[in-house]
Amino acid sequence: MRSLNFAVWTLVILFCLAQYSLDHPTMELSQIKYSYSRDCLLKINEEVKQNRNLYYLPNDLFKSICSMGLSQVKPTRRGKKEKKFPPCFSQSKTGLSMFVLNCQSAKTKSTKGIITDLIAEHKIDIFALTETWFLDTESDDFYVNSLTPAGYDIFNVPRGDGDPHGGIAIVYNKNLAIVSKSNNRDSNIKSFESCEIVFSLGTKCFTLVVIYRPPPSSINQLNIGMFFAEFSQVMQDYTIAKGELVFVGDLNLHLDIADDPNTIKFNDLTNSLGFKQFVDQPTHRDGHILDVLISRTMDNLVNNVRVLDMISDHHLYGCNLNILKPPPISETITYRNYRSIDMDAYKEDIAASELETAPLDNTYDLVDKYNNVLSELLDKHAPIKTKKVVLRLRQPWFSDSLHRAKRNRRKAERKWIACRSPEDFLKFKKARNSYNAELYHSKCSFLNDKIIDCGNDFKSMFRTINDILQKKKPTKLPDHDSVTELADRFATYFTTKIQEIRDNLNCDNGETSVTVSSSISCS
Image (cartoon, rainbow, N blue to C red; front, side):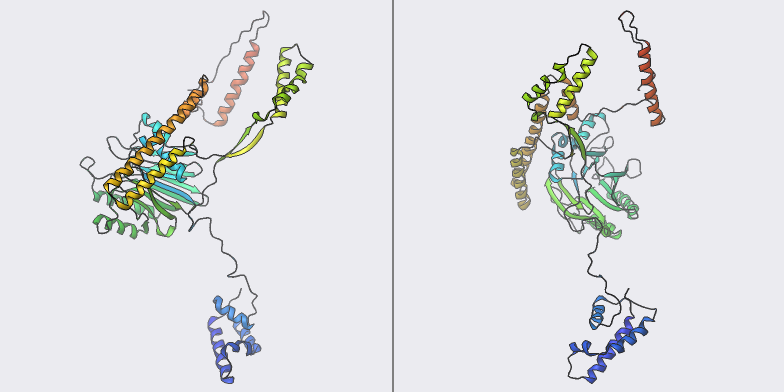
């Protein structure tokens, strides 16, 4: 380690330069460092090394001393070795993608495939939804499940009874590890609804809080003072929370009006607690900023914030988080390439097999031989292969005409945003509705063809319909205290069942009677 007394070295160098300049008035300053006696300075160096109050020299001064050949410290790689940063994307547009949308009834947008289309188009990892309008009823389960494409899950918080607004949900990639989920239903907060998910991503812990504040009315008897009192308390609680933090949602405040009293109060609250609001573009049809994306200033978590398509009367907006995406889910599958079988060669091998050359009279032996011979031939002509398949979100009903309709919708939207004229808005609305209708009909046509292809295979048909309706049959197990105890009960049950079948076989008159007692019931 090179460490020298900065003050002593400075005085020594200045003294030497002054002394040498008096002795050699015509010598240029650049030549001084090459002409001064090294022995004199090395003696001083020995005295300096005895001093224990040492300081690190700046890198540029150390280089100057090294150029004189005065340092006895071996050079290191300081300043040459590249710094290793933690696994994050500080300035990159890649990383975990998170989007937010006030969808104003997720029912219609789930059945038409709009939410799934947005997830596939923008490759969304976390999708926060406000104003879903879902109720806590079984009839809404279909719509809730329709929001989750393959590889995704949902945390749904339905709206309260009698509430014409509300309902929030978070659709997230199953690759993301979940630490906890919670909502404020059982709390004393009345002016807004919220839910949170704590994600664990590698070495990072990230908390997402989704908030929706309904506009005050005579029905809900809410006011802005009640909101700020409760919201400030929630923000203060999250200030000392561990890990990184993001607030998103719709607060129904006109945050684009800088001199509005509510905007001033909101900005003072967030700034005083060390938070920052990142949305700076209009998110509502009327040109106001009603939605928020708030994070701690020191976290350096949010980047590439953008406001995109207007899906309802709100725009879709999102950002990238400085967190590495988890690897995609993959599974290993086994398959046979039956189309590669040469049928003529396959028939010749069957004719030359023991099935033809050495027929058997015993039925059981013949069945075993059929099994063995045909399996061996199948392994020869179409061997089993294994490969890893990455599970990706697919939309097989998306056609070229849908691409054209989407381009027309975006073109009309850009024109309306530039001019903000009523005529352009009507044209954009017509293009948007046309695209949504075409997307819905394309999806219906694809699913209808899929059901027709099942033909008379009713088992396949019902399986397809259950997949379309997102019906998942729950696994029912008997009541048990532990998994080990349940496995022992199953083993005992089937062992007893087989033994009773053997004991009750009556082959004297060529008849078989079976009596089986059951000891396990699934309730």
